[in-house]
Amino acid sequence: MKRTIVAFILVLGFVIFYPLNILAQTAPDKKAEGEVIEVINQWGKLWNENNPSALLAMYHPDAKIMHGWGNQKGTASKKEYEGILPQRIIANPSLGLNISKVEVQGEKATVVADLKTKGGVTRTTFEMIKENEKWLITAFKY
Image (cartoon, helix red, strand yellow):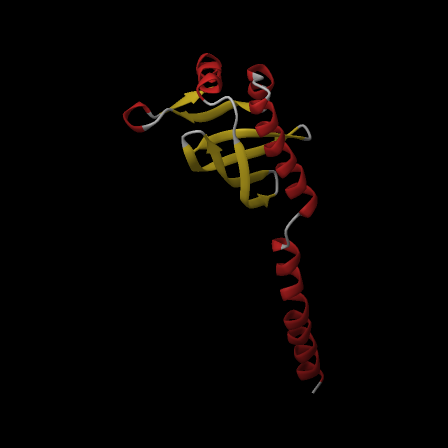
């Protein structure tokens, strides 16, 4: 009888507390989401201020940055993008951002946004990592 009661208590504890553990692990980190949104909004602001050096500072040293259209589309390293970014800003001196999705998992984040330029609206994905208490863009793709 004691074994049955102990087994019942163990099963009951598992049934009650295991879902709470799962919820705690998957609950959105609102603080981190807010930080990530702030970084992406700052990225848009710096673009509209035509500030390539400040924009480049937002990218991780190993970032992969998509650029170009159609047959000219490619991916550049941060170093390569230094020479490309000023031309991109000249081509699209202002843009609008509409963030539609933010996912944060620990020190990594993905942000999906509609990027509005004079050429239209493009669904854009920013991948990010938090290093030394700072969120940096590791990938920009569309």
